[in-house]
Length: 150
Image (cartoon, rainbow, N blue to C red):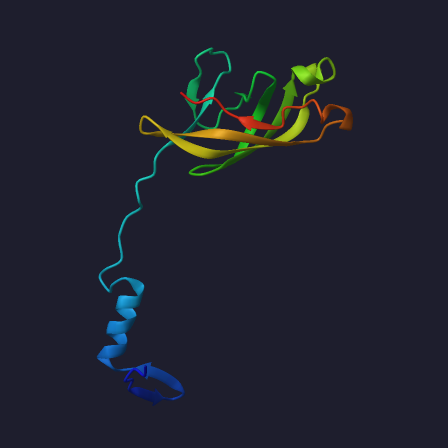
């Protein structure tokens, strides 16, 4: 099917001057009304941190984070936070590396992901760790898993 198009060339530039072209273009992109203004409301994103709390606390960018019953991050500096992912660098320790890592935790990067909604808030529900640690600890280390949520 051929569409009627009127083209005017002015100094090497092509202009579509037919109302039909504009109508087809508007329909293709979903309308020609004004662009939405203002940012979309974002759901706050948290991690349930069990650091010094059996029930856990909803926190954003915690410096110390209990990832599981076996692994903890300390001294975390968050590079990014939400709305779908968070990444931070810190020190990793856990029951799997004692006694070596008690005084000298391993340099590590943690990534939180898989946000799920709970009571109007988003909670990260998964973690993955990349760590600079001895090869002998890698099979025992708790480097990825599910985070607790309320």
